Length: 637
Image (cartoon, rainbow, N blue to C red; front, side, top):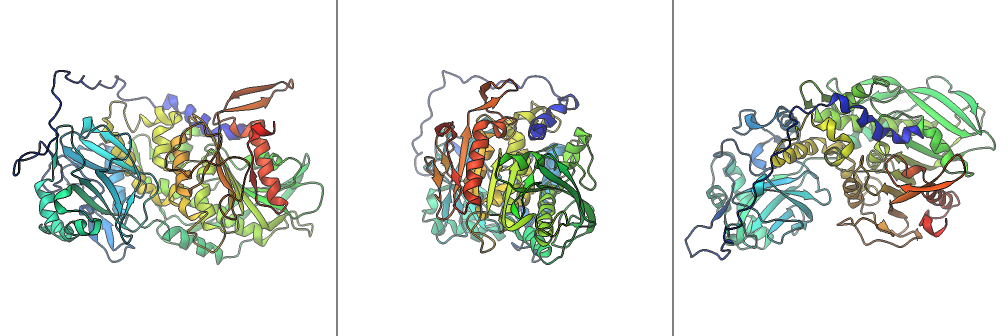
């Protein structure tokens, strides 16, 4: 049980190592001048300039990066999936103004063939945006690859004292696709109407020189594409999203074509009512020497330790679960999961994530070293190798794909002639970090029929930005007095580089639009309301990507999700059962036998009597040949 709490406790161990270099309180914004009259929002006389303008001139605004992403910062490259390559030059006038952390993230983008799919899009004004808490009809984010173009939902954030607007896509944008943000005359700045910048006006007219000239036809086509009068467009930026899944799909195909076997017969010993086995097999690391996955070819092999638990009594094969542990935990979590289904016997298999436990090249119990290695963070220089961070997530998935191939080919774990693993009845348990990592695995492996994801999240940059447990550590990279705009750009850049390893981008391909012809898994997602480690906002981002509905009672409103469903939920998505259940409280039985109710937290939600009952009911229906069922435990306890 200690392992389930690892994701919370590990960042806490680092507090003493993460002294904020700027500990002074952030400056308060100046109070508004109560005597200033309200702006005149009426359009000016014909020919008169508006009091605000869209800020766009990438070649003429020194020290500023106004619109981003922007295909101005790409070059043609026929070797890339999109035909483009990001090219951010370190002599750009605004580059020197960025922090070392942000500079490193921008430099990492140069390996990409496009921009983010769940990262924010930034646009700016020479003026002040109005306060926005929800989508504005005058600000539109479009998928231009659809026919006709489709408006995409987003969450707005106003930054830089009102000069900048960040649009976080509510669901991942399609990869390798052209997109645009368009501001129309329907949006008024606080000062009044908005004019396009001279550079944008020229682009909309199809005019421009150099790289801008190459982009001009795309801008000039926007009015017809979007059914707008050209005069309505007051701001715009065009960009292409990166290729997301090709590399991981190539790796999965390579793994599927290989044979895997135990290096030596596993060592098995009785452990209470179970048999506990330990073994290793030859697995493959797909990362190059710099920690980055480039293609689908393995770069080295290693001996990967595997733990297996199965019932000591009875005869297999038994329904089999692969387990993913939390940050700072290890594969021993499988021992807890092996008891989670009660008197319904199962086989449990687990391996360590990259940098964890006994994973080859791991760092053991050194918490600071683990964080540094897994998140590819250099604490001394305050830089993050986001490409290596991305691929630590991906390699952890590749290890699990190889483990699945191993146990499917070798289901008799203890060598007694009877299979212990049932290749036809397999699922995935992922807690915390393991829940976060579940999406890519489930999208790439069609043989996992059920999934229980405890405290999962998506949009990795938001897990780090919004998780209170990471706040002190992050001050090494983002001092407390960092302006909100630079802070948001830093996390946006991190998200852009990490996209291909982010679970949110695999979510749309788990239960629909799959890479294979599999049905997809029945899924129970569990979250603790107010989770301080994997914030509810990130669980919502993942659920939106999957399009999983909440199950009543819905304690926290989660926008852009399907309508909540009422328990019991069974077969609610065609042949599949899927739902997100929120816990505000859970009850625990103490040693004395007294049952006490407590606020649900990241640490205790999977230990609560309610959650255990819910998981057992979900599991039992599946092993009995029915669609799993999601119950409201309050109806049964």
